[in-house]
Every structure is written in C-alpha cells, then in structure tokens.
Length: 243
Image 1 (cartoon, rainbow, N blue to C red):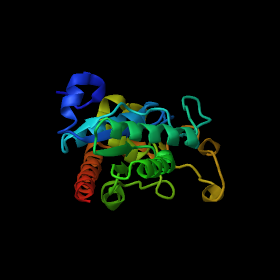
Image 2 (cartoon, rainbow, N blue to C red):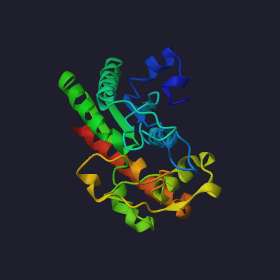
Image 3 (cartoon, helix red, strand yellow):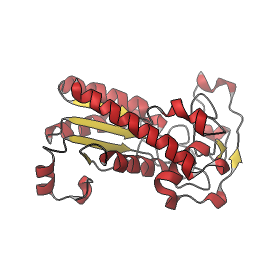
C-alpha cells in the first residue's frame, strides 16, 4: 500500500494513522535551476527524500508544498515566489490540521534553503497551540559533515549551493530521470561582497542560476550524502519519540 496520502482513500488513512502516526511534509519550490535541471527540482528532491524516509519509519506522506519563498531568484522567468508571511501561515495551519487528524509527529522535509525562516516560525506557532505535538524540520541534516569528503567543488558561498555539483548529484541519485547532464554547465559567479549584509537578488550576478560545476555531479556522490542525511533524520526522529 502506498504511503502517500494523495493516493489513499479516507478509510485507509483513518486505519493507518494509529500505526503510521508520523506525517512527512515535503516542502519544495518553483524556481529556476539552470539548463540541466527542472523548475521543480526542490519539490522532486523533497518528495523522493520523503519516499525513502517512509521506508525507514512508519509514516504517511502529506501532499507536497510547491509554492514557497523564492526571493533570491524570484525575478527570473520560471520562478514563482510567495511571501514568508503567507508560507508561515500556510505551514502553521497544515501542522494544526495534521495534529487534528491524529498524527503524533510532523516532520517537514525541506530542500529549499530560503524556506527555513518560515518553517521555523510556523513550528514555533504550532507548538504554542499544540504543546504535546512533536514537530521536526529537516534541510539535509548532517550533509555538512560529509560534503567535504564527497564533493570536489564545495559550496559557492557561505554554505549555500544551487544547481551545482551538490544539488545535481542529489538529483541524479533521487530522480535522475529529471536530469539532462548534456546541458550541465560549470559556472562560478562572482558573488557581491555585500550579499551577507544587504538584500541582493542572485539574478544580479548569474544568468543561469548555476552556482558551481554541475558537470562534476554523479549519482554515487549523491547516494553517499543522501544516505548519510537519511540516517541522521531517522536518528533525530527516534530521539524525538523518546522526549
């Protein structure tokens, strides 16, 4: 039987929640990812991470949140962004509804760094309303511990990555059918010095949204990092259960 709630009937969901009382919420984005990756890259990654995680912990997967905050690349054709305020309220209400349905824990699986602020704020608001409801949020936990051993190019600036060796390797492992490596490029844009202290759109210094050498990406690199990340997710979920 499928673990995706969208594919289940209401009676099956009702019967499954008591034994699969962890809700996984994939959170992606609608955003440009260069010439070799699709607009839905972040959503595909989040969905496939949830698929793999659901094989390790008894859980059900909520429908994906596609429209999120994409300010940095929001002016590029193909990107669609909503405000942090709207995203926060949306996630907050989904968390409350998840608890109402009988789930004991919600795990938000996010693959777009720009969503982190809204996710944390929504979790805090929901916790205030439902103090016994366990809420976790993951954006590739533990990846930083292994990326240096696996990837050659590294992050383009301050821990960020986008459509580069890292993210393309993730895609090759999780959903390579959506990758066209014949169009992969190697770009190292000059990041403005002020980017950490004032708002600057990434479209000011990149035309493709590729922030590194996508040509160096491989499925095996993606597998090593993603499997490490999944192990960390399972560990955190088990520790949260014990609280």
